[in-house]
Amino acid sequence: MIEVHLYGTLKKKFKHDASLAEDTIVTIPSEENEQFQDFLIRLGLKFIECGDCFINGKLAFRETIVPQNARVGLFPLGMHLIDGGQYIKGHGFVTTNPYDNL
Image 1 (cartoon, one colour):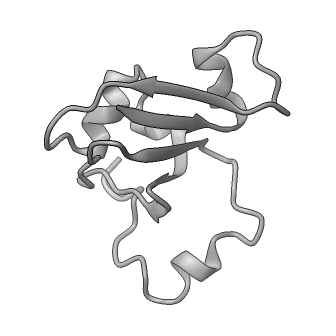
Image 2 (cartoon, rainbow, N blue to C red; image 1 turned 180 degrees about the horizontal axis):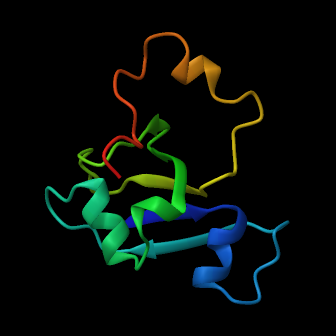
C-alpha cells in the first residue's frame, strides 16, 4: 500500500469536506515499477496540478519509481515550501527541473 498525504487544495479532490487544517491521508494499492507520472494519473491528477511532491521525503520527478509502502506527499501547484525549498533545490540535490517539458 502507498500512503498519500494531501496538502492544500488537493485535499478537496479526495475529500470534498476536508478542512485545510486537518490531515488528509488516503491509502492506495501499489503497482510494481510505477513511475510518479503514472501514479498521478491513477489518482486522477494531472502533473500540471502538482507543485513540489515527495516520495519518502525526497523530491519526486516524473520518472521517479513509487516503491511499495511509500509515503507520498502531494502539494498543489503554487503551494511552496516555507523556505522555498532552497535546502533541496539550491544546493545541487536537484539536477533537473520537474517542470521542464510540461
